[in-house]
Amino acid sequence: MTPQKHQTYAKRIAEIYQDNETDYDDRVDELEKIHDEYLKEFEQSLKKQKLSPKVIARHIDNVNFYITEYLPREMVSTIYDGGDELQGFFGYFYIHKCLFASVEGMKRFFASLNKFYRFMYQKGYVTAAQCANVRDTIHTFKDEWMEELRDYDEGLDCDTGDDPGWF
Image (cartoon, rainbow, N blue to C red; front, top):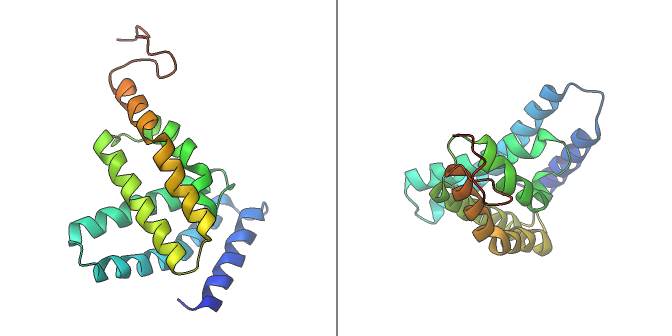
C-alpha cells in the first residue's frame, strides 16, 4: 500500500466515524472494505514469516473480528487507535458476548493483535505510541482478563468472586 493510499484510507475512516447521516450498516460495510486492504497486507507479511496457513488464518480471523466486528460498534475508536478499546473488548465483550471465548483463545487474540499493531507500526500506519499502547495494555491487564474469563466460565460473579446462585 502506498503512503498516499494509506493517507486516503485514514482520512476516509475519520470521515466515516464522524458521519451520523449515513446508515450504520453502510458505514460498517465501507470500513470492512478498507480494513480488508490492511488485512491483505498483514497476511502477506505473515506469509513472509513462513507461518503455517492455519496460524496465518487464525491471526487474520482474530484481527478481523476485533477491527471489523468490535471497533465499529460504538464508532469511537478506529483501527489506528484500537489499543484504546482493549479493556472493553477483553474485559467485557470477549468474556460476556463471545460464545467461543476461552483462555487459550484469548491468548491467541493477544498474539494476533500484538503482531498486527507491530506490523501497522513497521509500515508507518500507526505511531510508536499507538503500537506501544496495544502491547502495554495487553501486558498490564492480560492476567486480570484471563482470571475474569475463568471466573465467568465457572459461574462466579466477576466483580466479587461470589457464586451468584444462578445455577
